[in-house]
Length: 165
Image (cartoon, rainbow, N blue to C red; front, side):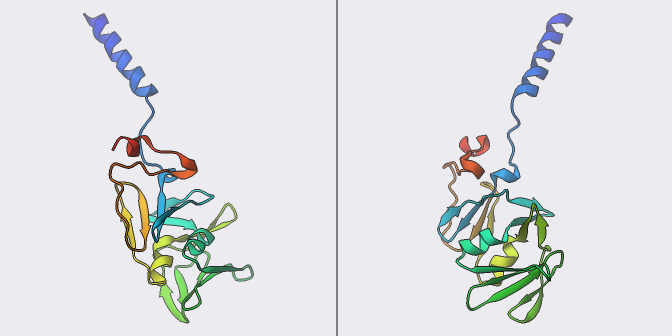
């Protein structure tokens, strides 16, 4: 009897070790902007509870212009009406000539400038929300949670968790 219990326990341990872990990773982050999902060419990530995205990706998805000031390590986003200047590593930014504080400082990673998506979108008057069930950053109005519809993750992958909802 002990041998049978041992074999069952061993089989259970092996099965649990072999079955892939189903969890949400940063790769599963999706961004929905003004009616459509947009895909970044690099990994989005969450740091200290803030979603960071490549500045050019989010700004151009919104139709804004981006410029880089290498001398000052600063990035500028301009939509013709509003302008925000953010310096790498600083939570202080300039929004239309006035000082403002960001929730998270922009950072350089793999030669790319990453910014907190909420800070950027809200400074330009966009609504920002988080769909925790589908791990989706929502920018703009009209988003409806796909509920039972799988949402593609990065590189066209669909997470197992999303596919079985």
